[in-house]
Each structure stands twice: as structure tokens, then as C-alpha cells.
Image (tube, rainbow, N blue to C red; front, side, top):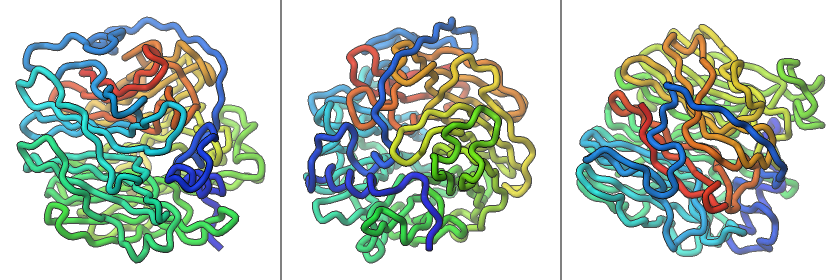
Length: 486
């Protein structure tokens, strides 16, 4: 019997059917991701002044932040008549400075039916972002979880999970050749023979190595009639010919994993994958735990696993494992050479059935090519807000590490914020964060108007940071904004 998967259950199967048109869509949250959903609203407040580190370009802009001449226009870039709200965004930057931003878009603010992938491009010298376009494999597909990368030749690729009316899950990929701003026809990444027996191919994560190899990690899961996993393992698909052909490898030791994140360094052949594994318990695996008390007695342990590969050809089992009795959120990572940093959050509420806020954010530093734990610190120790969402980490060419995240006092806080912080000592210390944008409605609502998504886009570009994230306070619905941070 497979170990329990903290982010899967009956809700996942039922909401996947709803989103693709095979059931009622009157529930608050639907779609495959809704297995992690809970709709809750409350009130909270946080008031902080940004300091010199935050120095947002324009932290209160509505639709068009001021931009330097010749630089990408800042502000909301996703609004269009095609969708009522947009969230869960990623961005990529080509060597010539061209930018692509992708996101999840929903035609209705009250339903996830018809969910699709939206995108826009900016090309150097352009006065505006390109007209918003959308992607699905078929007109009735449910499309979600997009990620985007650019290869060294300037080609852009976007990967996503799609579920059609036949209820067979697939991972799709589309390419925008260098010099173009439209993604072409989707091609299949996942194995159709394996897909035929799966319920979901969750959370595809796309990466391009410094050799130009494309990697897509995803989690194919088969559920029984009661929503219990009967087959699961992280798979990494690899293409060395620009998405022309794919080979697929199961990552050892990931039968209880829920999501994975790829982070290839800028030099060398090593590639890292980190994943959240296991977790949960009869009362939610830490639901009544206090910060730092290790969760609930008798709960199923959760893990953050580190796997290493030679440019995606073969994968190790978990070299180093961080164990906790609380649930582990979606991790992110940054790497350079033999060093790896993993940003992960811990939650005290049941992962299955909720969009959990994290009560602590941690950053682990590994050396020796991902084999030696050098440090694991509470990166949120100096934060005044108690709850966090959508943490992302990136490494600059200078070696500085930067993190962004949403923060709030409680679910439904109208004065939540999107924040950033930086470490200049290899992640050993993290000063109190500063405001990038405020206010943000800090909400656990999923797949509805103000949804903040499960991740944001963050890239280091020269001496600057490019970030794409949802703003939900101006109109009551989330729309993706682009911002440049120093």
C-alpha cells in the first residue's frame, strides 16, 4: 500500500471532474488543485513601512507603474476580457531581454470551469506588453499549473497540466521560437500509456539547464474510488532536442511526494530537484501544534527531500531529508555549483482540503552537491506577521539570495502585503522583510476572484529582480503584475 499523500484525497478526484464539466461547479473551489483548498474569510491587519531594501518601484500602482525608458512597463499585465481573474504566475527572461509571463486564468470569478493558461510577452524597446493570449490543448480542457522558461538560444517554453472531457490527465508543452511572441501548438510531455491509468499529473515544473536541456517534473497519481493513492511517483521528462522528443525517469523515493521543484545551476552538469513528501495525521499532522513544538504526537512525518541528477539523465534517491511533524508547503530552491538552498514553509493545518498558510518559513543550505546539510534556519524569525504564502527564492550572480512572499495576520486580512528580504551570508541570516506591494487581501480562497495562487514568478536579471505576482486589492479579483526590484 502506498504511503498517504498529504495533498491528495477524494476532493481531488471530485473537483477534477467538476472542473472539466462532469459535475456541479457550485462548490467554493474546484479543479484538481482544490484538494488543497479551504474557503475561509476573516479579518486582519498589518502596517509596516518599507525600508531601503524594499524600495519598490511603485508599491501602490494600479495598472501602470512608472518605468524607465526602454525598460519593461511595470504594473498589471494580465487583465483582458478573456478572464475574470488571474493568478499562479511564472516568468522567464531570454538572453536578449525578452520576457514571457504566464498565469492561470478563469473566465468566471466564481467558478474554475474553463480554467486556462494566459500569457503575454515584452520585447526590448516595446512600449507595452503584447496582447494577452491563452493556451489549452483542447477547447474544453481544464488547464492549470503553468511554468515557463527560456533556453540559451532565446526560445520560450511553457508547460502545464491539462485534463480533458475524457478525464485523462496529461502534461503539455508549447514553444515560442526565438523572435516570436506566440506559443505554438501543444505537444505531449507525459507518457499517454501511463496517463491512461492516472487521475492527475500534478504540478509540472519546467526548467532549462545551462546545456539547453529541457526538464519537466510532475507527479502522476492514480487514486482508488475512495481517493487513496494506489500509484504515485515524481517523474522527470527530459528533452535534449528542443522538445522534439522526451525520455521519462521516475525519481527514486518519491512514492509519497506531492510536489517537486527543479533548480539547475548556471554552470556544471548537476541538476537538483527538491520535493515535499508525506505528512498529515488523524488530526491534520500538526493542526494544533504551536510554533516550534514539532507538531502532533502520532502524526505522520513529512519530509523535504533533495535529489541530484546529471543534467536530468538519472536521479538519486533523497540524499538529505529534513523531517517534520507539520505539513510541508510547496518548496522552491536556488543553486549554484555544489551549493543548494531550499525555501520551504511549515503549516499547522491539514494540507488536504485547504490552502494552508505557513506559520514559519525556513531556508536550508546544502553543500557537497546536495549531500551535506550546512544549515537550516527560520527565515521568518524577524517577521511581525504570523502567516505566509507563496515563498520563492532566487540567487543573484553576486551570490546574494532573495526571497519574496505574501504575509498576513490571519485569513481574510485586507491589509496583507507582498514582501521581500535578502541574505548576503549564504542564507545564514535573513533580516526582517520589507513591503513590495500593499495592500493585498491575504486569503485562503482558491480558484476564485481574489486567489493568490500557489507560487509567484521571480528571476534575477543582472543587478535587478523581476517579479510577477497577483494583486487582488484594487478590484477584488487577482490580476498579475510585473515589477522590477533593486
